[in-house]
Image 1: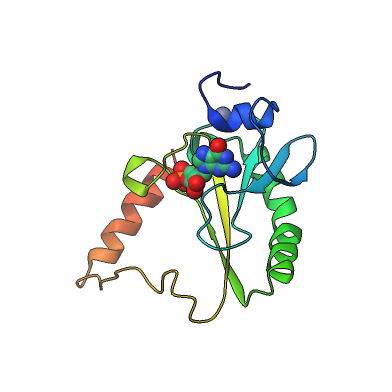
Image 2: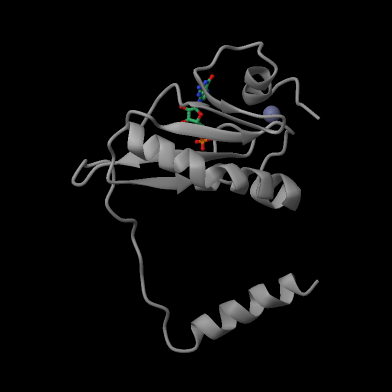
Amino acid sequence: MSDHNCIFCKIIAGQIPCTKIYEDDQVLAFLDVHPVSEGHTLVVHKEHTCRVDSTEPLAMARIGEVLPKLTASIQDAMEADGYNVLCNNGFSAGQVVEHMHLHIIPRKTNDGVFKQWPSFQYPDGRAAVIAEKIRKNLAL
Ligand code: 5GP
Ligand code: ZN
């Protein structure tokens, strides 16, 4: 299923041009039009879903199948030292386009793109409480 208002569905349908990297019957990868680094690539499943948690496991698995080859090819082509695989889910997490997608961002040592995100330490006992809450939902 596609969404008429979705820009990535329009790209998948060929109604909006893109610079294609890879395509099969289920998956499309294309260059991000506003890259963080050269070779910054977006990977989408052709079925429209908004977020990881609303995507069929088999669709995620299909993306997973092509990811190692894609990341290796992008890293080699860009002569990068590494890469980030990112997926923003929801407005609070920075998602702008509401068609689930992975970013592959080639990285070079000291490229200044970003180094680390803020982190903290759990106070005593808090990690166990959090883990239990999540495990309860997994069991549903
Ligand atoms: P998000 O913040 O939703 O994770 O990222 C959406 C990404 O899609 C952004 O990095 C943005 O540059 C890219 N993007 C938005 N519109 C288009 C488009 O029409 N074509 C391409 N190739 N990329 C797009
Ligand atoms: Zn879509």
